[in-house]
Amino acid sequence: MERVPVLKLGDILIVSIQIDLQDQGVLALQEDLADAVVESGARGVIIDITAVEIVDSFIGRMLATIASISRVLDAETIVVGMRPAVAITLVELGLSLGGVRTALNLEKGVALLEDRDNAGTVAVPK
Image 1 (cartoon, rainbow, N blue to C red):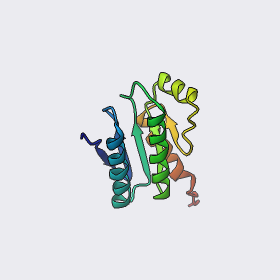
Image 2 (cartoon, rainbow, N blue to C red; image 1 turned 90 degrees about the horizontal axis):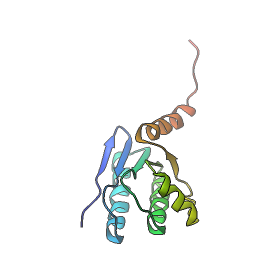
Image 3 (cartoon, helix red, strand yellow; image 1 turned 60 degrees about the vertical axis):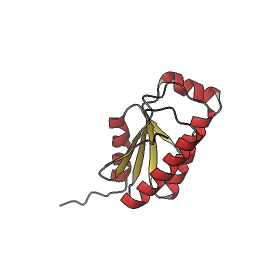
Image 4 (cartoon, rainbow, N blue to C red; image 1 turned 135 degrees about the vertical axis):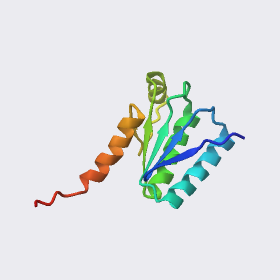
């Protein structure tokens, strides 16, 4: 079984799905990602699905489940690189991906996480 790598960039974990995930692969990814969030203290998880051409209800549920696991572990999940056909299919399947934010690309996903962190800071006048 091929595993999906989990990369660390500062306090963000990046998962780039480049393979067709089967049931065992998804379970392994969920476990690997949960372990990585805890070990690294990550504040955010970015899942890049640029290479995903076809999506079904299984993949949609997987994304929502990973987001829920990450949220429980205090990390926000952002899905990036969604193709228009994938977005249309998810909507047609009635999958809302609750708790999952999206961005067009990796750069915008990182910016979303940075904006979230900056929203909690207060500028102190000098």
